[in-house]
Image 1: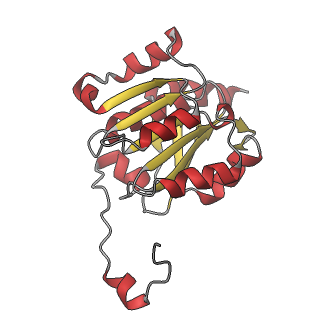
Image 2: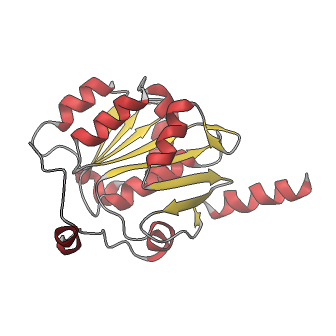
Length: 208
């Protein structure tokens, strides 16, 4: 049975490895760990999938990445989104899962040399209840789950996604091709996903 009670003196001596993020990624997200969960949310057409894919490519520096495209699957639109990011340099460390159900994903993650970082797009297509999410996170404590969610206004859509937002170590609101992070690991600076798209979005907003 895993020891739950840890003396405070022992905790202070434990060494936790933060990922050595650099540049805009460090400015946005700080020095995170491969554990727990993050949440990315935004309205349609604002760049959340593009951001998730850019993040997936960057995370390939630190481990094996699986992107479970539950919403789009292996489709022309998703292919174009992937091609825009260009995964060629990291293709050996990245796999795409074509609408893989959560129970099959769990079986995959129990295998040796399974992905370290799992991106699930999107929460609304998982069928998970909040307790299912907690169980998934706690079963694989040495893995990082990055969940993508639809938005309802400026909040994640649905009770489950809203609850995940409170639990997540990193929370990222995406609007107008800019990611606005709140991270327990530092950072906190906006991250521009697509400069041209961002400029056009905010020009249109000012004209309204």
